[in-house]
Amino acid sequence: KLSVESSMIGFADLAGHLWLQNHHGLLECWQRDDGQWTIADHKLVPDEGRLKIQQVRTDARGRLWVQFTDSTLVCDTIIWRNDVVSTLRPLLTLQPKRDFPASFIFMFYADPRNYLWLSLGVGIGVIDLNETRPKFVTLLKYPDEIRDESVRAIFRDSKGNVWFGGFGKGLDQLVGGDLTRRELRHFTTADGLADNGVRSFAEDDNGKLWIGTRYGGVSIYDGQAFRNVSI
Image 1 (cartoon, helix red, strand yellow):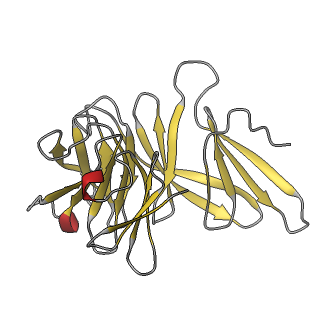
Image 2 (spheres, rainbow, N blue to C red):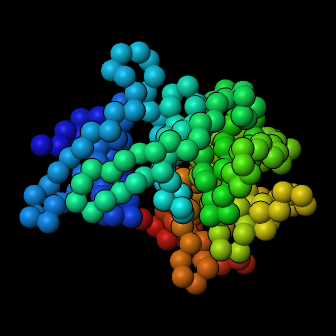
């Protein structure tokens, strides 16, 4: 029996297993060859104490990222098998103030080029995961570069642009994802965006960016203009 009392978010892995987040870890669910469902409880934090799981994400390489309430980030490889419980193998741990210059993370995103983007309140921190030891590269500062201190969505598109969705101040684009040139463009409702609160991104097969907003539905950006769809 699956208890969803404290389940918060889920994802599917490469084996088709469903993972559900709760405060102490992850529930792994899959349907066996005989049609029966199996549930495995991966406990990542002890029952006692204040430490809880804040959020989980997977990246393009199939790795599992877990953020704890103290803003520690842990990355694991999921060693999955079709009909048995998976194994989580630790890869790295990133600590606030040691590996990045802040004590709190609003959200994070590991992109397809193996860079980790952190919404830190003081700006966007960038960590290069291609190095033997992950290296903090730079901070896109708020408010000089990033317009919203509370970025809630980050996405790198197929052209290399990196997008930042703010809590209520619109959308920023790092053109080409170029951290040397650091050309940033800013979009709000004045430019056609449906709403200044941005919560999610997706890219379709035609290279159009779909932007989920808090109150305005979805904006679809083709590189020139926005088309808005109410939901």
